Image (cartoon, rainbow, N blue to C red):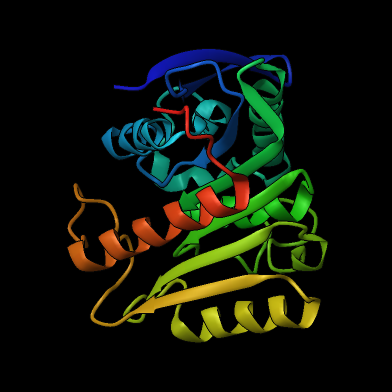
Length: 237
């Protein structure tokens, strides 16, 4: 399992998963935005596999904003884009402060809720060079005040790769078309991949909607994209 660290956000503690490759680096860094299940087995695997591939990876626990015992299903009543952006900024800063991490080679990725958070992240922080979005829904409305993640698309400086199921309802294929068009209009370098007979949550092997072929293809494409965009030194292992 990935290791855990504790960071401070807005005067309170936030736990996060963290792993780095063996060796001295400096390695590129990646912020991993979790899905609705939080820092579960799937998120542990993501952080661990990224480290195996040569990236220092951190996954913040956005649920630190929720009161103890608060139902995750009602998280939108508490979570705000402002708070999520604060979590991302603290996590990114942690990576930048490490001697083993090259702060000029940072990426961000996420699935489901984390896909939306990733789109938010690249829209509020130009330090990211790459972003990978898996089926990020509800991106047309903000959490709390301010612009939505889609409204922030013109601010993106990162290259973006997206992965979506054609049977998904949120985001629907039409939603994906709208996001694609917004990125094209804003001149954002992006590449979207869509999968037939695939719905929401297709990459999580522990979920009911797992589609192995789509999961493997998307992870292979994302890994190659991140390595090319951020660079991975041959000494990483």
